[in-house]
Image (tube, rainbow, N blue to C red; front, side):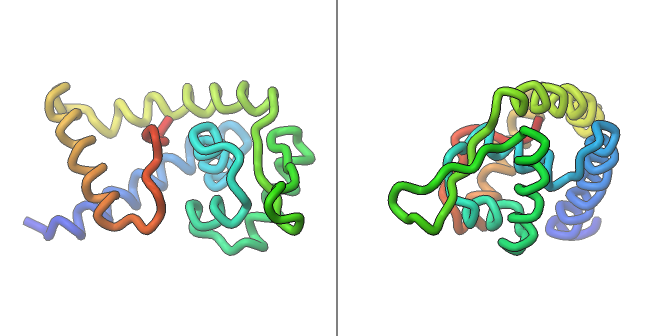
Length: 147
């Protein structure tokens, strides 16, 4: 059998590819969809927080936010503690788009977990959360961001 780190990494690669294909059908890029899903859980953080979560350079995130703000999906608000910083918030329109993203991804989760019982799915979720926490340098997320 292949090593667990390899299996997990390769599974993540295949899942990312399937995720990308599905959100492209909605006219979005993977980072845009991921940002909306993250904002839905942790709205109101500064742009640096989201750049770290998405593993993108801050300048790349700024350009993406510019496009998403122009499309009416994200709103920037000044950070009251730091006048140079911006905090990100969802708009009314973005909630509809998030619903579309979640609906699009619902089948992906079912495809990924096909053949696993409910108990196995629960156990897998618990194990993956433990692995995530073991490697995480950021604070825990209140809810799973998956779709």
